[in-house]
Amino acid sequence: MKLSRKHIKDILITLSVLLGAFGLSLLFEYIFDVHEHITTVFIFGIFLISLLTEGYFYGVLAAFIGTVAVNYAFTFPYFSLNFTIPVNLISGIIMIAIAVLTSALTTKLKQQEAMKAESEKERMRANLLRAVSHDLRTPLTTIYGSGTTLLENGAEMTEEQRKKIIAGIKEDSEWLIRMVENLLSITKIDSGQVKIIKTPTVLEELIDSVILKIKKRYPSQKVDIDIPDDVVIIPMDAILIEQVIVNLLENSIQHAKGMTNLSLKVFTLGNQAIFEISDNGCGINPKMLEFIFTGYYTSSDDISDSQKKNAGIGLSVCATIIKAHGGSIKAENLKAGGVVFRFILDTESDYEA
Image (cartoon, rainbow, N blue to C red; front, side, top):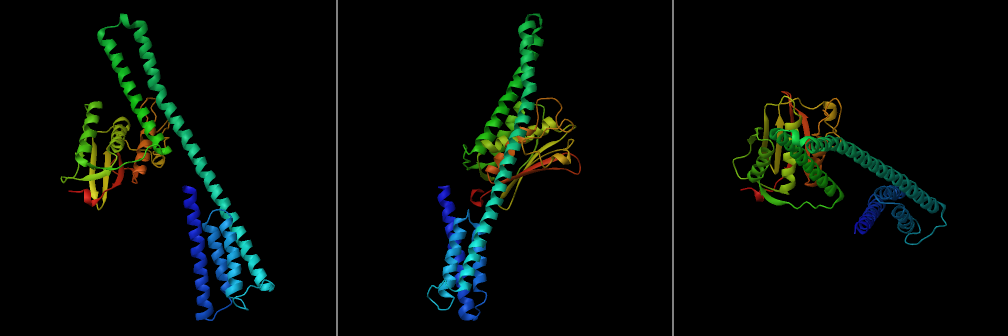
């Protein structure tokens, strides 16, 4: 299906440009009585076709058609083919040469772009793998060590000590589960296995569900909520967008050193809903801002503290989900201190009460 659409697009481009060149040549010939630049018009048309279509075929075909058109309709004797005239023969050779050279150049450029894109994907996969390896190592080591301690010395421990170790194992296990869920989300969306199905979602209900999860995971953490008083309905995959907001809130809770205020604000502007998660913590190293959504947000000095809760995977998941929704996401440091994560989703006025 994709291949046939590509061919249809190339055919339409070829026909449109050739018809445009033919029409412009008629205008020059019979309206302005200009004969000298007709070949130039077709040469420019051949150049455009070779530039805009895939491969060599359409450019070379257009060169043959252009040569015949110039020879038949715009060269004396009119409305007859005569390739014995040197000018006609030279024009045809020039058109074909331009088509071949332009097609070769554009094909090479497209191949280089494809190789560059694939290289970038491989780099991101490698970065993601390093981030995953870094993030999983510490909790797995902790779970193994705690389990070994219970197995070997459990009988000598007090009940309180055992409960503390078991609670740590439970906490690390829950974190690993969330990590795996994030990885599954990002790999499925990137591979096209998950199709985003948007359904009208009440903003207030979405935020209530998010806050419920945050309170369950972080009972002592307060989140200031600021959403419109009016009922706002946004088309989205509610489960995935909820995952985005939870990830962003958790990122601030886990990484914003010195934070005393965490807020979640949502407002509408035209046909867009703007979500802002901000804190007044330590902020983000400006050098890292452009990389935080790439899947590799790890730095021994700036981010990693040798603990399990690294930001890389969660933020990469957020970017993937928002992109799949047709939205945008960015992060910026606040002048007063801290950072704000902002993502935008399209709304439909028909959904708003």
